[in-house]
Image (cartoon, rainbow, N blue to C red; front, side, top):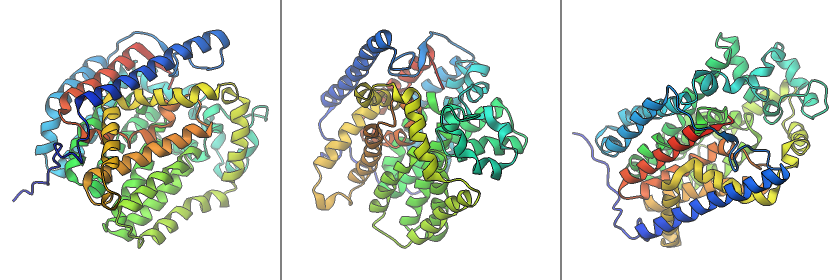
Length: 458
């Protein structure tokens, strides 16, 4: 007999604080933030040239265009808006996960191909700042890792391109390994990033189901498919980084809720180790991980396995001669040698948040407003009991990680891609929204407009 998951009543005041008017005010305020970032940013860039972006607050340029992906993107948007909410209720759980991945995959591919094959996929990771420029320098991987620090600073001999210098070598080694197994070049790299990056939606759903219940996970599913974030998941390596971090958190959620805690804990630790060797900033995933531990009924039995798995990756890189801390110290200097030293903190500390609004969309803004209302309206003793406050805490932890990154001053601009690993965890807040079809249409419209009006820089 098919089991029907318990339903969350959105009419419950603990789940549905405020109403449509409050949602509209929140979305309007977010829209004003984006407008202010665009107007002030354009003025600053035209007058001083210090923002170093082509279409403030985004990296890119105004270029209305269409491409081979346009019909498919429109078709996916219509299909998910029309049938997504009902299918998420009817499908069994595992087929639903496959449907979400398939939908996200088609949506992301379609958006990428709006820019054409070369500009949208094959050429993205081959530009002068990207990882594929240095594949030939990793012929001897241990020797390159030992010498990695010597090429981080601008002015150093054969200094690394910006993205190679700005990340631990695990990021570049991803594409080195693809090259070694015969999948070299921009086309394979782009295909890998899109295919792997879209699995993050599945990881988020698995986590939400384990920590906040199946009903809220099902409500979130169509929003994870039609995420505006797909505009950048399909055009930057950060989509791959987001997927690794998401699966680390998903395995941790499985471990702390009692699902094969030894194996899932070990797997979570290994992926956390990989995560911090893909991007220095992803150390802040620890904030979300802390929320997962809190929501996992504080079961600490898997932690030794998580720690053991985590230590493997730093041990291997250190044994091969790469010093993470020294490289990060040099990166901070490199960051201020380049655009990071010119871009004004006073603008980007709030304009970064405007970028995030464009990445997560209006539905997420309204969902986060409702999530905040859930937390404020729930007694402290009950915060970890109901599914709604548990989901609100999870999304809130991602927002906290994002705000810490913002205040650090090491994320001035480019956050539409850099913050993907955090932004994805804000999207489940959309499960608090009634009437999902209208909100889904808004999400899709934003993504389509961005992709067709702006030629993104990643």
